[in-house]
Length: 277
Image (cartoon, rainbow, N blue to C red; front, side, top):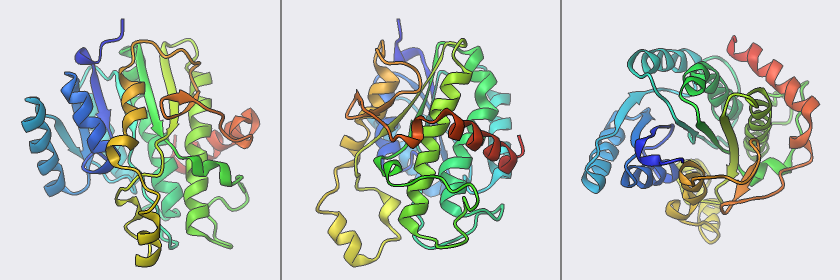
C-alpha cells in the first residue's frame, strides 16, 4: 500500500508555479517535503506559506541547476543528512529564448532542463533504490513532439531557436525517463514523465510582452498544471508500466523519436560524458 503521508519527497523548483502547488498539495496529505531553491527570499516565503497551510515545515536546500558543481554539492549534502528518499520530482525548468551558456559552458536549456535532472537523479539513485518502493517523476512537456535530436549539434551552435532548444531539452526528459525505467526494471523504482499542460508560470518570463500576453489566452493555472505530478506521487497504484508518459493523469503516447531505445541509449552516453558520470 502506497501512502504519501509517510513518504519523503524531494521537489526541484518549488518556489513558484507547478512545483509550489505540488509541494503544498503533498504536504497537505502529510508528506515530508524537501525542495531546492536559487532565490533564498522566495524559498523562505514558500516555506512559510506551506507551513501556514499544512502545519508542516519543509526543508530547503540551495541548488543552482545551471551548475554541475552546485548539483553535486547539494546531492552530497542531501545524502549526508537523509537516509530515505521515496519520491523525486524533477520539476525545475527554464525556457531561455536567447542562446546563453550555463556555468559549465553548455547551452542553457539543454544544461538546466535535461542534464541537471539527469545528473541529480543519478547521484541520488542509490538512495532511491534503498528506499524502494519509490518513484521518480520528470516534468517534461508536449513540446518534445516538435523536434528530433541532432547529435552533431545538441547545443544548437548553428541555427539556434529558443523554442526548439526548449523542446529538445524536454525530449531529453522523456528519453531519460524511458532509459531509466529500463535500467531500474528490477529495483522497484518506478519512473514517469508528464506533460503538465501549457501553464502560467515564470517559465515564460523571458518572452516578449506581446508574445507573453498572447500566450496568456491559452494558459492554465499552476494548480491545474500540478495535478498530474500530484497524481503520480500520491495514487496508490499506477496501472501503467514504468517509463510511461502522462497528461491529465492518463497515459498518452509520446513521440516516435522518444520511443527509440537506440536514441535513448545514445543520449544517455552523451549525457554521462557531459556531466562527468
